Each structure stands twice: as C-alpha cells, then as structure tokens.
Image 1: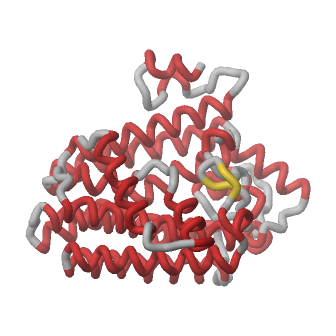
Image 2 (image 1 turned 45 degrees about the vertical axis):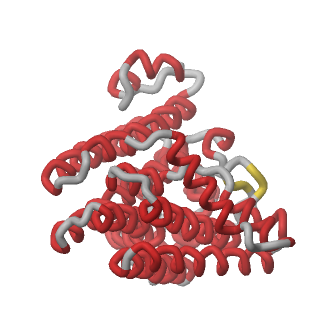
Length: 341
C-alpha cells in the first residue's frame, strides 16, 4: 500500500516537470496538474511495490498524459468544471489550453522513455487508443440496436479511459521485472479495472453531487452518451414497451416525453440495482484475477475500496432524503455507511 506521502512525492515531481515553463503555459500546466486523486499513479506504485526514481517517473508520466486528456475532454464536451474548479479552457482560453495539453503529452512520453522501452511503448499505445476513441466518439457510426450501442460505448470507454489503467499495470509489471507473457496479463487486468473505473465515473455523472464529483455532472444523460447507466435505462424502457430511437438518443435529441421517461428509468431501483450487482461482480473478478496473475492483492483492494467509497456516496446522494433501497447491500461496512446517512 502506498501512503499519502508517496503520492505527495508524485505531486512534487509533477511541479518539477513544469518548472521550466513560464507565463501562461506554466499557469495552464500547473492548473491542469493540481488536484485529482492520482488514481493511476497510486495503482502503478501499489502494484509495483516500490517508489524509487524509476517508479516515480513512471507514475508521473501517467498523471501528465491524464492531465493532457482532461484538458482536451473539457473542450470537446464544453465542460465548465474540473476538479472542483472552472475548467482550464474557460479560465485561460482554448488556444493556450490546447498548447498546454500538447506539452504535457510530449513530456509524458519523454519521461516514459527514461523508465523503460516496454513501458514507453505501452504508454504510446494508450495515447493512440485515446486519440482514436475520441475521434470515434466525435464522429460515431450509425447504430442499429441497443446491443450495438452497448458494444460501441464499451469500445469508447476502453480507448479513452481503460487503456491508461492498463498502462499503469504494465508499468508495475516492468518495474517488478515480470515475464513478458505475465506482463500482458497484468496489462489486460488493468484495462478491465479501467472499464470498472469508467462505469463508476458514469454513475457519479448520473447520480452524484457536483460538489463531490468535482466536475460538471448530468452531461451524459443530457448529451445521450452511451454509458452503462443510460443504456440500462434505455433497455428498461424497451422492456416496458416504450420505443427508444438509438439515433435520437445518440445525438442527444430525445423528445421531452422520452427524455423524462429515460431519466425516470435511469433512476429507477431496477436500473440502480443492476448497476450495483454488475459492479459487485467486477470487483470480485478483479480480486480473483489478482490472485491468478500474481498482482499484489493489496494494491487491488486499496483501488477497489476507493471506488466503493465514491460509489456509495453517489448512491446515498441520489436517494436523499430517503434511504436507498439497496442500503443494506452497500459496498461499505454498515459502520462506514452510517457516515453518509
């Protein structure tokens, strides 16, 4: 388990990396790299079970590329908040924000190359996957069914989010000198953990409080993003005999009646229960795969506990002022759950 002190060391390394900059570029990069949970860095350091120079540089490279993608995401999505503050493009303008994201990306690759060739290649693969997924999301294909929509949404999440978690686990395997075949299994496990992380984040967007999320929430439902909560809601509407236009849903152009019906479906006990059970199964699978692949279980457990805490607070916010119907089956121990009541 990595301590807060170790993650503070990542914060310090991030600021040292941008120290060579000056003027507006420095301000944007400093703004972009401040705050955040350092989830990817913590996963790498926890799984690697070390915090030497190479480990710190690997962890920092993940946070740099992550910061770069957040800057661009907020421009594409017209997001107004990030990490509890005004989004960088609102504060500093789009042009300087784009230049800053380019610098952060390039510096990330430079640091990765200093760690290990295999880690550099893995980070580069993640970078190309993120760009391709973003392009695919901006110009989506025509979808003919809810099943196709679900597959498409998973493909986007895998490229935009999950691949970087795979890189974190790849970096940990490289630092632990794991054999190439096992390293691939570590990486794929990280990708699966990244998909789980995205599902939790999607739940926060639908059910969470903006103050707790630290970013604009509700975007996915309004814009028709094909996230798991939105798709589960659409599946429920179809089950109840309502017609859902994939094209209109995807374009965020549902009529008022359909939109209200979708909102009710997404917030229904049935959909929230399905999401709860799905995430429970995925957390259990991550623990099982850790045992099978030799990944330190402590790292997976810390990562899972953080997500469970986030998700439980999200469910509780959605249920206020009533008790959530699944409160007796929450992820956290009862004594911990009472703090959210």
